[in-house]
Length: 171
Picture 1 (cartoon, rainbow, N blue to C red):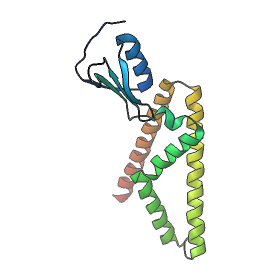
Picture 2: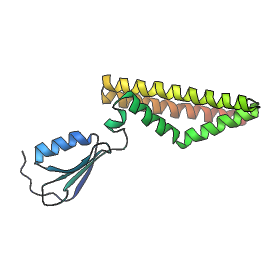
Picture 3: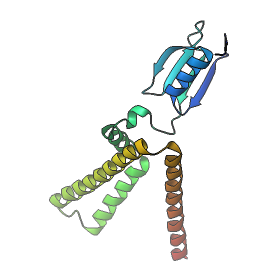
């Protein structure tokens, strides 16, 4: 073990706050002053200050608690989806199109339409959440990052294709 006695105040963003805590406790002999792994935060100290080192799990991924079970993964993805401004805008576009097409001419048809869109969205989010939770348990983080990058690239490419088609048709 390295016999460090003091650090300047250091804050690190890490991929896994729990693993980082274990590393710094074993390697430098730091003591845990406070931790909240559900939020991905650990404060470590040599004992003279409240904390000499703080590690925060990067916000680019979910905390382990958020995807610990299919139910938690579903709740996390549903909340993220429902609060996403693009999701809200897409729902607005769906309802505007339905209104223009005359799908929601009566109260009953409007309720059926909203219910159908809601159930379809919930089914899709459930399938995605369960699939990601199951995949996470079976594949490594490198493959998940590759799949994330491929999915993001596909979305950008699809958006580019739609923009190109729109510009070509309008001229």
